[in-house]
Length: 172
Image (tube, rainbow, N blue to C red):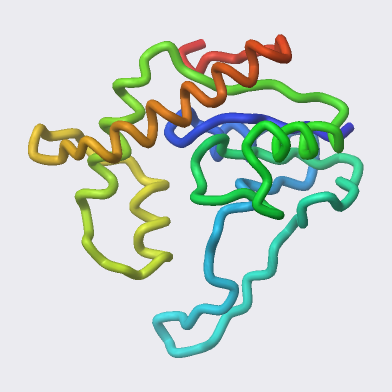
C-alpha cells in the first residue's frame, strides 16, 4: 500500500503520519518537496548531506506513507501549478486522504508564534521552530503568516472538493 496524506502545517501531519507509518511498519516521508539545503554543517563542524527521500515522478515503493503540505512552498517540482503537481503526485498512490481542521485560527496562531521565536536566517533553526509549538501572544501576529496558512487551507479545500477526497479533521 502507498498512502498519501495531503495537509498543511499545524494539522499534526508530521506526528500522525509518523505514528501511522510506525504502526504499519511503513517507510515515512514528510514533505519531500520542501525546498531545503542539501548540505549543512552541524554544531560540531561536521558536514552532513541530506538527500531527498523521494523525487517527483518516481515510483513510490510499497509500504510507504508520504505527508505533503499543500499550497505551502514557493514553487512545486518542475514548476508545475498546484493542481498539476498534486494530480501527478496523487497518481502514484493507492490511498489518498486529507488532514485538515475546522478551526484554522489555531493553525495561523501557531505559525505566527513559531516564526516569532527567532529571526535567524538559518534554515534548520527556522525548521525546528516551525515544528515546535509556542503559546500565542498578540505580539506574535503577522498578517503575511496568517495569510499563508489560510491560503494553504483554501488550496487544499478546493482540491479535495473537486476530487471528493476523504478528510480527517485534526479535531477528531
